[in-house]
Image 1 (tube, rainbow, N blue to C red):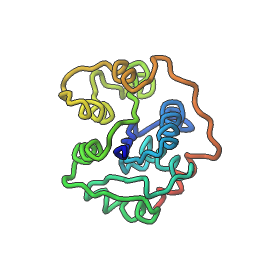
Image 2 (cartoon, rainbow, N blue to C red; image 1 turned 90 degrees about the horizontal axis):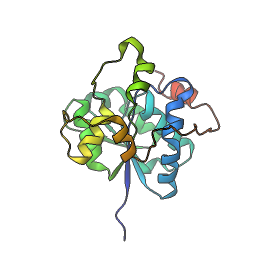
Image 3 (cartoon, helix red, strand yellow; image 1 turned 45 degrees about the vertical axis):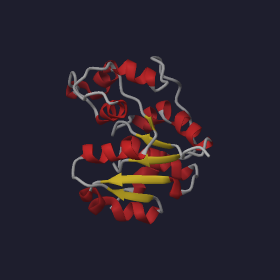
Image 4 (cartoon, rainbow, N blue to C red; image 1 turned 90 degrees about the vertical axis):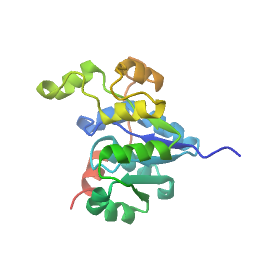
Amino acid sequence: MEDRQVAFISGPIDTGPNESYFHTHYVTKINDAIQRDHDFVIGPLPSGVDAEALAYLLAYPISPERITIFVTQAEDGMWGGHFRSMGVNLEVVEGQMTRDRDAALTRASTYDILRVRTKDEAREFYGRMWREAHITNTERNWKRRRGIAENEIVEELEINRSMGCSSDPPAPVKEKGCLARWVHEVFQD
């Protein structure tokens, strides 16, 4: 019997208008994992890839039992009840830092579904807020899986190629419904 495969889905906290980044870079890989009957682990953020992946999986639909959301103790206090009410699994990790949570997500999974924005994409997306040599949590997740030191420079194109992403982005995958509205409704107070 084959070991259960678990995908760690991670990415930026802002995916642009109409979740275009998510639909362009994540949906096809998530669909492949669903078809292979894999399970999923995700962070708890109420925006970006975390929220969009959760919404997408639940709308697919797959059983909430195949999804585990990892939270720090503080995040459990803010969002834990909400996730429990959805029927997904919730894992509260030791420590208070997002790095602690993300390290636990890596340990609990067998592979990643992720993509890192290229420098040009990040510069265009963030404008004056863009910072040269900024290491994103998504990049940290990729490096952690491979045992690469955080301060070791790996070009984003190399990261994306290793994840099966070409340098030319694929066309966005169109899905029914309004994911943004669902995410907004789910995470309202």
